[in-house]
Image 1 (tube, rainbow, N blue to C red):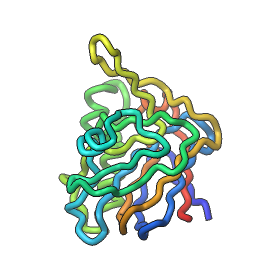
Image 2 (image 1 turned 90 degrees about the vertical axis):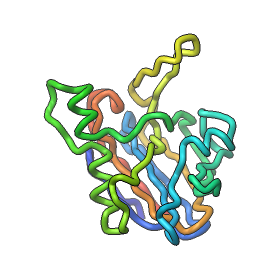
Image 3 (image 1 turned 90 degrees about the horizontal axis):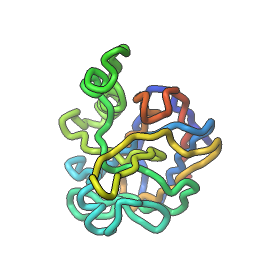
Length: 193
């Protein structure tokens, strides 16, 4: 069964070992922030630093794993029709909106949506790390190191499939930031297999 995350909102759910999570961009051009915590001890959390270290790349796609702060594999990327995701930038927040979009209404962003969705699992907002930003297009200038945020290159129906390596709590959003989504906000679909 496929579940839809409405634009600019988020959900949280659990995965058992070997269950697969399929994150789908149904309309194209939409980012989804993904967090994972160990279900047995939520102090174990997804880590971009450990992931970059052990995978030896920032271009994470099929065949790569997402690692925890305890050097454990949390999720393996089984299939990926896009091959472009960001693991450098933090979830957008009220502060992000004030900084980058001073002329726009302040929004809780992915940070607020993740905090709200993960709260019932006992996860406090101060434990929210950098998310794995599914479908986000963040080129890095090879000479200067400067980051830019460009519209996602996804087309309707593009997806990423991840397999849980252990029991997990997962947070997932339909991102709220203007630049991340090319100025529009669309839903994200997901299913657990």
